[in-house]
Each structure stands twice: as C-alpha cells, then as structure tokens.
Amino acid sequence: MNDFADLPYRYYPPKPQKVAMWLLWQFNRFLYLPGNVHRINSVSLINEEQLSGCITRGRSHILFLCNHPTHSDPQILEEMQRQLGVASMFMAAYDLFERRSKLDVWVLKVMGVFSVDREILDSKAIQQGVKTLVDGEYAMTIFPEGEMYHQNDRVVPFQEGAIYMALTAQKKLAKLHPGDPVYILPVSIKVSHNHDQRPAISTLLAELAAGAGTTLEREREPVVELERIASALVLREAKKVGLDLAPAETDGLEAQLKVAAGLIIAALEKSMDIGVENSGNLMSRLLHIRRRIHQIRIDPDKAAGFPEVGKWADKAMLALRVLSYNPDYLRDRPSVDRYGECVEKLFEDFHSRVLSPYGSRKAMVYFSTPINLLDKLNSFQGKSRKLLKGLTEESERAIQGGIDKLNDMNRCPGGELFYFK
Image (cartoon, rainbow, N blue to C red; front, side, top):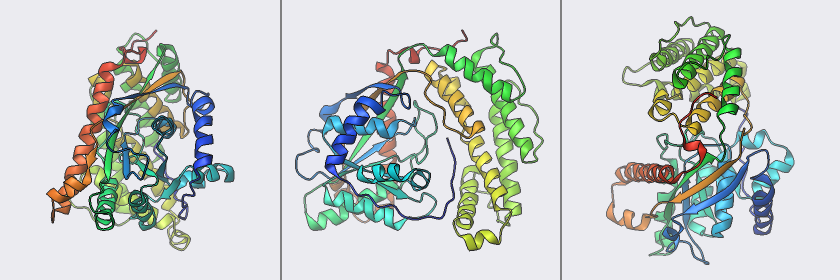
C-alpha cells in the first residue's frame, strides 16, 4: 500500500545481536511465515551455487538487491538468509518504526533494521549502509524499487541509491583492504498461491464493486470487468478532491488514469506556487510536489504556516496511487496471481489498510550471477555517473530475468489463467 506518514524524522540505528537474530529466525521459520499474517508455507532457494565464491565464514561484503512484490518479502528474505547462514542489516522507511510498538521497534533493531527517510538524501542511513558493507560482519539488504507495488512479475525501475552506497563502500574498502570486493547479489522473489484462489479473489472484487456503487458482473471478460470497477473507484475518489472525470471506455482506463493524475498534479502545482517545466513527466512532477509537502509536514514550524498542507498531501497521495497502476501488467497475462495482485492493490489503496493473505502461498528465490564491484570500479575509473547508471540497469535486468525464470518453473495454480467461478 502506497502511503506516507510524514512524521517528524528521527534516525533509528540498528543494534544487531546474532543470538537474538538466530532465535527470531526460528520464530519466523516455524510460526510467523506460515501463520495467518503471511501464509507462506515454504521458501525454496534456486541457483544457490552462484553464491559459493562470495559467501564465506569470514567477512563478506555483500549487498542483497531484491524485488519487492509483497508485504511478506522481509520475512521471506530472513528465511532465505537463515538457510544461507548470512546475517544481514536491512534498510527500511522510518515511518515503519514510528507506527510500531516499543517491542516491535526493539525487534527491528536487534534484527539489524535501521531507518531511512526516502524523501531526502539521508546521510545517516547512507553512512550506516556504507559502514556495514565495508566492515563485512553483516550483509546489507535493500529493495531498490523503494515501494511495494503488488507486481510480482515485473520490476519497477530501480532507484540508484543502493548502487551509490555500494560503490562508495567499494572505494573505501579498496583503500583499507586492496583486492577485497563488494558483491551485489541480485535476488528475485516469486510468490504464488498453492491452491485455486479464484473464489476468494472474486469475493474481494465484488466488495470493491459495492464500494464503488456498482456490482460485479461475472459474465464479463475478467480483465474488462476489473478495469470497469477500477474506473468507478477512480471516479469516486476524484470526486472527493473536486474532480469531475468522464467514465473510462472499455480500453480507456490508462487514459483516464493519466488525465486524473494530470489534473491533480496541475492543481497542486498551482496551489503550491510551483513552476512547471514542460519536459517533466507526471511522475517526476509528482515526486517534486511530494518532496515539498514532506519538507513542510516534518517541520512543525513550517506546517503551522501552511494549514492546507494536509489536503495537499491527500491529493498527492491519490495522484501517486493512480499513477502506480499499470493496466498492461494484467492485460499481458491475466493469471490468478496477477489478477489477485491487482485486486489487492485496489483494495489497499481505496481502503487505506493492508489486506491479509486470502490463501496459502509458496515463495521461490532465484539468485542471479553476483556482480563484483571491484572489477567494475577498475574498468570505469573516472566515469562514476556512467558506472552508477549502468550497474543500476544491470541489477534491474538480472532481477527481472530471475523473475522470468521463476515464472517458467512455476506449476502452482496461481500461474493459471483467471476466470470467474
């Protein structure tokens, strides 16, 4: 669920304890993952032999880069790392800490999780990540997509911060211990349902239809019906912020989403007195708005001077949710898993709460070829920007390639085509 807390920022440092990590690994393995919160009954590692040259019993300088398709990904990765025998730090959005109990915050810290403010250049978080990679006692784990988008079969373009951190660590490590590499390990996660979940997904979609003032029409082609209900939900939410949109035609959902997001963004830019460059696309314009709102809301003194900032944040949130939909994702292959992901995203975005899993699932983890940053550093001396961009794209391609391989291997009912039952 895309959401923002905009609470005053404070940094939460990690306080890893390996004994506590081991105990919590066992809890995660036997109780938490298979329980009602996640319903993951197995985690299989594939292509594990790729890691033999970079995981050692001594110090290993490892950055796990992973796609982020579900709310269960951190727990899946903890089980993956338990099987590998590798303890890792995790970087997580700071509002995760702000929303949790003191016990939850303690657990996060002893598991090596530390906070980051994703809306700014968070120097403390970057320094912690670099230090972790240079020391080599713990690995680092980062989700470079930045958010969870309910798209298990397709990655969203990666942010460059994780690679920047790894390159900075490699430069420092090369001075301290010449010849020691930092490895980027591209990790692809695939989660699929073990049993036929068409009835459960249809029930959720019927609930969404009722919330949009319509009913589920099971005689329609499933993708067309989901898009019709999604369009009705967008119309409902747009009216709340004063927009009067026309209903989307059968193939017009994508155009409707862009129009809705464009109108909201233009209205925000006018209200906030933000100049617009014609070259900026909708998402880049929205991110600029989002940063401005964030800077105001995390500073109580600034927030007092902008009483309308809460309404701005609600509108920006709606625009972000609208822009994060990709109709082609479902049209490309309307599998049970993909259809379920789209229904889950609609449910969470328009109810503003996380949806519990509606069926048992299995997780598969695929390891692509590790990337030796020392080799890359030597090849691109003096071309840091080109190297940063190239490594980000290489990591993205590797993780997408791993997802494609996992889909080819998947024999679960979740990989079958969706139809109403």
